[in-house]
Amino acid sequence: MKTAVVIGAGFGGLALAIRLQAAGVATTVLEARDRPGGRAYVWHREGHVFDAGPTVVTDPECLAQLWRLTGHDMAQDVTLLPVMPFYRLNWPDGTNFDYSNDDASLLAEIAKLDPGDVEGYRKFLDYSAGVYREGYQKLGHVAFLDFKSMLKAAPSLAQYQAWRSVYSVVSGFVKNEKLRQALSFHTLLVGGNPMSTSSIYALIHKLEKDGGVWFAKGGTNALITGMVHHFERLGGTLRLGDPVSAIETLGDKVTAVSTVNGFRIETDAVASNADLVHTYGTLIQGHPRGASQAGKLMHKKWSPSLFVVHFGVKGNWQGIPHHMILFGPRYQGLLKDIYEHGILPEDFSLYLHHPTVTDPSLAPEGHSTFYALAPVPHLGRLPINWDEFGPRFAERILAEVEHRLIPDLKSRITVQFHYTPKDFQQDLGAFNGNAFSLEPLLTQSAFFRAHNRDDIISNLYFVGAGTHPGAGIPGVVGSARATADLMLTGIR
Image 1 (cartoon, rainbow, N blue to C red):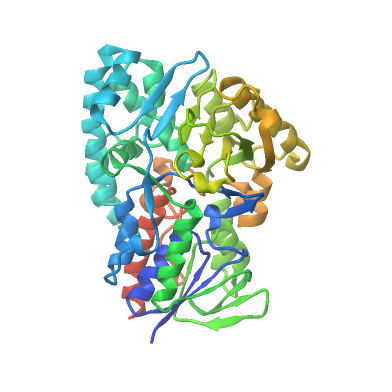
Image 2: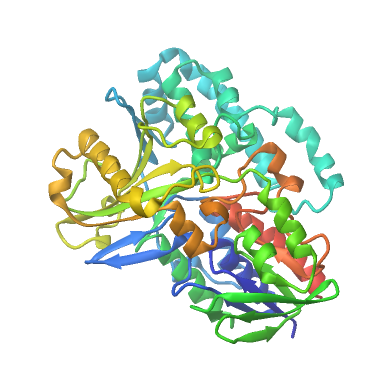
């Protein structure tokens, strides 16, 4: 029987491992941390369940496929709960905008902002449907290994003016500034600046409209648990708490993988769901490709990091929906500070996650679970001491939530902790503490992103946010499909 090793038990790594195991390849997943999930880690504290993220599940069909490969049903292991509205967007002047795929409700929300933009929105939806078809349905699970494959896709990309930014394209359809923000903020959920991320990412609107927004009962990590159950049901092996120390090579081939705790496994192929720079620069041994490629990757543009405050609160807050975006007084200027200048400004925009409004089991009775997330520059742009600054920044964020939503918040908090760029770097090996791998620019997409199979080491593969098509659950699950197709062809 052919064998494979997958490094990292994030969504991408597990999705790939399931595909390989389902195809009859004996697959071992090696995970450094004590729990599977990668960025979808979880903490249990004082009766609360705190998801590290991601928390927005879109295109559940791409996940269900992983079970159907072997005639199983995802519902055996995972219960997905609908989230409605998808997001409530809130601005400092008190304006709220409930974003959903209910046509009548969404058009009414748009008309409240500007009746003149309703027709423009309909045209944007047509555009979003086009890029969804070309960029996601046709290309979202296809590997780009050579420039020729990129040239084949070029006409479709040109048709939709992929060189323009999402914000630029949205602005061509609607005039109201709040609506422009409402239709462009999604790229931030995959690490992209709406002002510079390719307009192809406008497909997210159609993706959500068709597939809805969901949340896994028990938290996002419960979805990871379900994937692990399915993988092990198929005969796969998961090894936790044992970081990989070396990917061993002989000539232009991987021969084995060894770990910090002395475990060593010979294998026919290796796929890494770990950070790209960490994999090339630290793990690959005995081959010049490692240091060479790590050096090139370091000079690319990396997504920002995140600062996340997790907190448990006395009381049930049914009036606060599952997902909120609390926009700050600036949009374009704030994004420029974070992405270009590496500044941590006084103002910020926040993503507020309130899972207990959907699943009360994630907190003790009479309590609620929240997190508030702020995009921040990665450590390469802003090398501050987060151990010192983190507590102060957390208090600023909580003060904003208190001011905008819960007047007596601080007196109600029963448990609180935060996660910083330094934690992304230490816990996940993320280069400069980035949160979403390579920034999703047109010049870092498809062929220009990390290849799903290395160009030199023929049985070394990659999966996850750093590969095509990019970050987000549908993106990394799509990358797993592309990588699995390559591996199954290469191994046999």
